[in-house]
Every structure is written in structure tokens, then in C-alpha cells.
Image (cartoon, rainbow, N blue to C red):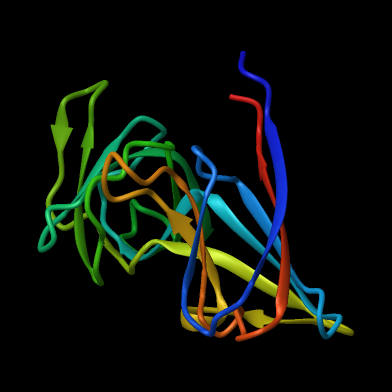
Length: 189
């Protein structure tokens, strides 16, 4: 088993998005504005979490493959987190957590088809999903709502052989002229 990694660093913000290359995608990242002493943000980047509603009657299990009916995105389910309803009744609501490295393309707000590789069964419009989410929390004097867009930290998968994996700091966090400190963590593999 490979040992986990931890790496820390800093950069001066420019007011634009910043990609921090690590050579690996971290499970979580902490961001702190050291100039102003404000906002510690923690982002949970792995695993991908895909919320679903309107669960159909096909029951997904770990190892099932989901495919977007519109996007064609695919991924393998690591776990099914049911928060209400049942698949048998067609009203399941919850989250799929995905096996790291299996997400191909991006899910939109769409129906997904579930394939169970153990049985070979293939469903039709088995659940309605929304795009995969990364959970970001800003901590000031108290926890605030989940953040997104320019005030969030997200995964950076690299785009060419010249860029490696890591994370992206949104432009709202990478404020111009501010010293931004960060620490990234990866679990044991």
C-alpha cells in the first residue's frame, strides 16, 4: 500500500485562478489568506460525490457503472448513500460516491443508466443526477455555507503532458497581492 502524501506551500494571488501542480490529486486542501489572517477554507476533493434524486427501480451497488443519458459520462460507483426513499419504490434520494480515476467526462443534470457488472443487468433512466460536486467549507468565526465557483477550491486533473495533477484555487480566493498559504493531503492508496 502506498503511503499518503502531505504538501504545503504558498503563492501571491493575482486575482486570477491559480493551478497548483502536485503530481497527484489531493483528497483535501486547506487554504488560508496569510496577509489578512482571514478565511480558512477546507475543500474535500476526493471522492467525487454525485447527488441523485428520482431513483428508479434498478438498485445500484458498489461496482455498478453509471452512464449519463445525455452527456455519455461514465463512472464506477464506490458507495451508495441513501438519504430517503427506496429504489424499489422509485423515489430514492442520496449520493453516489465514485471510485477514484473512473470518472470519464462530466455528468450534467440528467438521467443515468445503471449497469451492474456482477449480473449484467442494464437499467433505463435509473436515477436523475446533478453534476459531481466538490465540498468546500469556509471557516471564519463559524462554518459558512458550501462555496462554489470563484470562491472554491477544485480538482486539477492536468490538461497536457506538461501539466500535472493538483488543485485549482478560484480567483475569488487568490486575491491580488495577498499571500495565500495552502496544505494538500492525500490518503494512503
